[in-house]
Length: 111
Length: 116
Image (cartoon, rainbow over all chains, first blue to last red):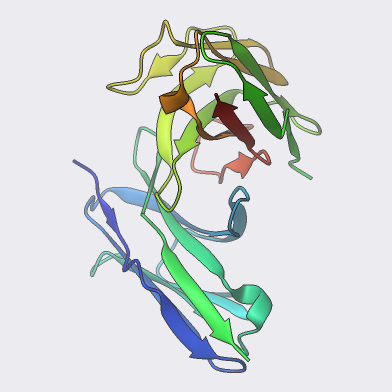
């Protein structure tokens, strides 16, 4: 069974700090990886997609992928209270194209 | 781009009635749509996958006769919750993708269903 694991948190960081969110996955054939942000009572919104090993940066967000370790992370620099949300990691395994979602990590950025 | 519109955003219905939820892709053709359900403080649970013009593929444990999915066009999919009961109260979210590949999903705003 394909699994995507995330620490449920909450992860609490002060405003201005770097928040580091982690995700591991079980299927070595996984080909694409996504981070979604979900505010309470709202639907998920896509933050980042990453397909190859290494880092991908977009503004304050950096996604890091290490396929050998089956590990993907999201770094949020200069965290803001508005970043407080649940962050969902999603992984597409090869062939099915149906993403498997982790349970999400709750992030709290306090002023 | 890649906007998905979902209606209604909130619905309250009486037990035993049916509720239809619409999901539209506004600026792209959605060859595949996914329907999720989410209970409070829990993760997304995939209910079914639908491809335009085909019957939906339901996940294990999801009753296809209770949750009717129609994907009749490349821009519209509907989920009908038939004979709703209080335990069906949940947050239903659709998502869509233009290609059968590794591109990301685009989510609608969700429908909060409350069955009294």
